Length: 227
Image (cartoon, rainbow, N blue to C red):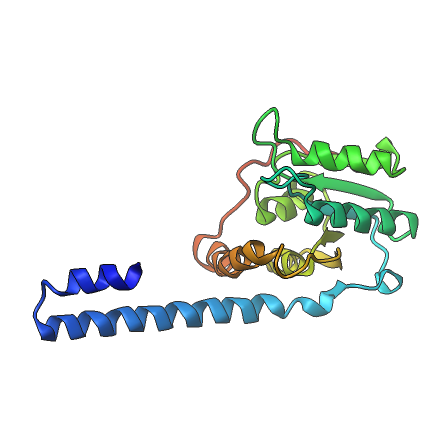
């Protein structure tokens, strides 16, 4: 489709102009590829701060669980969601954490990631007094910076799949926060394909947020004490 469009557009130009345009498109494609590759390399450097084995996870009083929808668009259960719940429960009952902040999007009355995570954690035996809800974790950046700015945490464990944990830790370190990640089980390559593609661009966007725009959370609000 793109090739046909470019061919149709370039036929209205002289051969010399067409050659120049083709070279320009190729150059831009190469530059974009290199930028995406560089972003991935930079973010992946946080991998040593993430853990797969719960026995090796250092103790932190608080875990921040990054939100995702409980159900897929098809209606099935979202395995990313379930695996993050499983990881959080394992941390809590292994004595690696004492409190949990569930952080996610609260876009509408019918879509509420923190509410769904809280319900699942309660079902799994984590007491209500140990769970705090962050309803303005619209992006990874918001969740990490609000954990500090709103909930007063400068040191905590982030819970998600490894690819998002690496990005979260990169953001945390840039803002002088002491954060490690516990990696929830990933999903198979087929199921997670779209998410992995989005992550490629999310990592590039992350670098722009940090080094170009210096973006801050959409909302901060009053502080909430985690006791």
